[in-house]
Image (cartoon, rainbow, N blue to C red; front, side, top):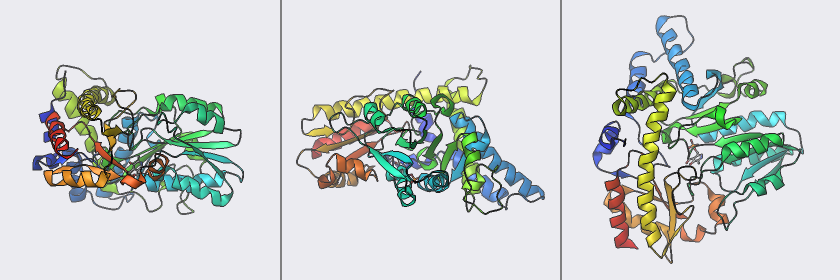
Length: 410
Ligand SMILES: Cc1ncc(COP(=O)(O)O)c(C=O)c1O
């Protein structure tokens, strides 16, 4: 069974324009059912939550439903473990602001040099309170975060390890379940940035056993907002950063000063509609017993399709003697997402991307806010990497077209 790419593309109205979107790790296109729900919210239930009148009751229910869906999507135990916010960066800042109050001077936090700065900067600020920050550095030969290096950094004082599920530059998937086990055995907690992973794989936070897990909805076919998961028992322990009268048991609201954007939270249930439509389109005779089963089936098709796209581009790049792929050179479902970065010998990355721009194809160069990784790899001087980031709605024709353009440039 193959993904019906025509069916998929029809769910993303922006794709009709003919422009090729290959900057999806920057932000994906939005699925139509998400837009429909945002519109429905704004046109029919756009009132303040929590009042006794009927429309307010309905809007309150709708925003609560968004939390229920969030929990279903990532297989959290409970809707109270889902915290929406305007961005991953902000959610992580809020989390660190709260968490630092539970740490003591001399406690240690481990961050990486290959994360987006969103999962580094907030933790670094803890230094002002005497928290010691240690860097888990990318091995420049393997271009991986090596687990042996992490083990050397863990001490009885380590309180938290913060790292990415997949690098937004390398596309490499880190073995989070294995790493989480090691971190827990050392008595620390783990916080995962899944922004570059979530557009490609269905998430199961219980299986991973992570403590905190965050991603941006605007990169997972939704609108400009984000979702943070935290284990309920840990959220209950965290001090709030909202108004003093917001109760500690309000696990989400106490970490959401200024509250959430109602229509965007509710709108994201449209992603559930989208995944369900893929399942029923491809498996009309299957009796699924839960949304999760449908999502698993839909995601499998997406992953297979992405694998085909990634292999085509990687195969091409591997034939070019002047191209250096920054990350794994071949595709494997467990080790890579189709975010593919490279540099071209003796060329500046910006110069190549600018030559692609006139062809109505959106690719990109730079450090993608993973500045420290680009510095570690000594790539600032070539304007960082050229990144082609694909998702399941991209077609093989688009990849072939891009390759034909590359052929004229390097
Ligand atoms: C891996 C990764 N983490 C975090 C972020 C920050 O996300 P947000 O824009 O929602 O703050 C990005 C954005 O590009 C990212 O790629």
